[in-house]
Length: 246
Length: 68
Image 1: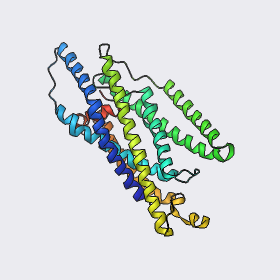
Image 2: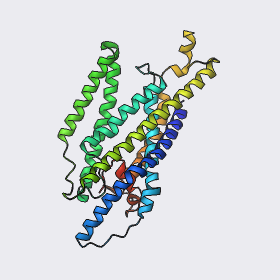
Image 3: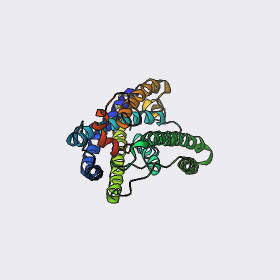
């Protein structure tokens, strides 16, 4: 059963990656192009020669972008199926589609939204290259704490459910997660400054586009995987009982 | 009908022993794949040059990973 779920998670990821690529192409690339135009302007003003590009812009915005989106989404889809299999009918009575949607929402908050509040997605040329080490390390620390906190929070909610009721346990667990994230973000150093002349519309547009792409990836995985899992369980249920049990 | 539902394996939790090997497998694979998309030739590198970084450049920015 786990192997079958894993394959379905990865297929859901593949679909999400291709859709995410299309969305990136339409709403993300124009912002990346604007940021790169700014970068070249700055380089020219400083009298720097144009750097030789080992990969052309066409490849970066085409095959490279597709590779990035699909690899990311398939990996996330696979991990998603493991989270689903671990949570299914464990301390909750959610059906496959509802559980998939719930995991999608919680995972989007933990993996994307919470880290992005502290270290938001940034277009090319909007960060100081010399701080890449610190920014990367802090980003992954934030991500690790957020994901661990969300898993702990879900476990706590399941544990409290039988004692104080479903909604109350959810509220307590969520409050715990929000406090953890707030304290972490308060404690971690800032992600650095943005060049004063960087076009603000490009920064804003890029961030909205990046969040939209991530949202589309996670919604697609949650919905498609929920549908796949539900269909798989319906077939298995029928196979064993010989009748249509949903 | 209730006893029939109870014996239906799709209505019960999937055993941890069955999940673990798959979780380990996909966990390792996903970490490697995500590393190349998000970090290789950024903060740290396994290969010299900037080819990997430049190839996944747009995706890395748009997925929200720290970059230049």
